[in-house]
Image (cartoon, rainbow, N blue to C red; front, side):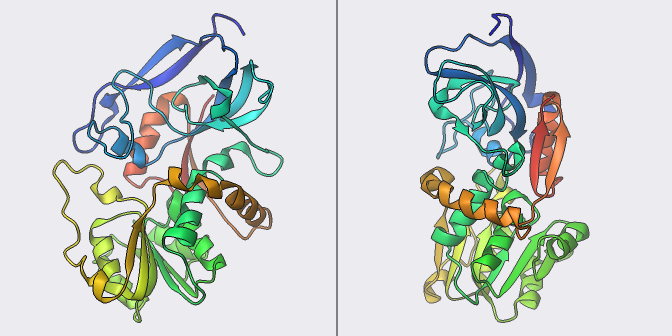
Amino acid sequence: MSDELMTREIRLAARPVGEPTAEIFELAETRVPEPAEGQIVVRNTWMSVDPYMREWMREDVEYARPYELGAPLLGSAVGEVVASRSAAVPVGATVTHFLGWREYALLDAAEATVVDTSLVPAEVYLGPLGTTGLTAYATLTRVAPVREGDVVWVSAAAGAVGSIAGQVARKLGAARVIGSAGGPEKAEKLVTTFGFDAGLDHRAGPIAKQLSEAAPGGIDVYVDNVGGDHLRAAIAALRERGRIGMVGAISAYNATEPVPGPDNLFRLASKNATLGGIYIPGHLDLFPEWIERGAAWIADGSLRYEQTVVEGLERAPEAFLGVLRGANTGKMLVRLG
């Protein structure tokens, strides 16, 4: 590898207060060091932007190490190995790793995962076959397990996790799957593309009323990607021994003051219901199982996915801001030139 290999990267220039703007990001150029023994250099071809990244921009984030000011951001990426000092990961291999937001990444080979692009395109390992799909699967098999005949509600159901979760719920035995999203087009797509039984538009009116009409007998499982009024509505609609999986709370990510919890939380007790959180690093042991099942479902056409693609590293901040505003259907990805 040439000593003059340069890479562009996106750095966090300032911590956002409230809704982030483009001004908190900085595009910089730096040299890529030669790999040491056991290291590889990857030319990133695709990178992911995700709602959790907003939380990691907070200095006081509790469950992860916050992004550092002046340093490149982190996130999932996939690319081609262009230099290697590891026998396990040769030049030419396609790998996933966590050093996104840059064109070239130097990392330990042990931190990369070689993926099989004969099954699906490389970028699918950032979405349905990545931690996105795994989050949906782990939520519905471990945290809020679906049982035969259940009624399931998924919020932010046109997004990366939600669109997969609704389909997985059906495959695990759900009798009725309801999704909610922002806008009539997304609500319709839940039914026509992703196979939900009903699609609710949370912008059209109170979500609790819409949910009671779509599931008059209540729900058994709720996959929460939103929090706020959606979580309150789910608690009210839960049946005996209902389950809630807390994946995300995008409604609160830009809040500048502490966000109060739902005022009906204790109703879970009278229903013998459970509310469980999911932080995906604690469920990575499920990855092989999910890859096997998910890849087969994608191959036979029974698991559908969509991608919203933004071109070029310099537009990665735009893509990230779009995710927070609901601009994506399915997985938001950045294709690196």
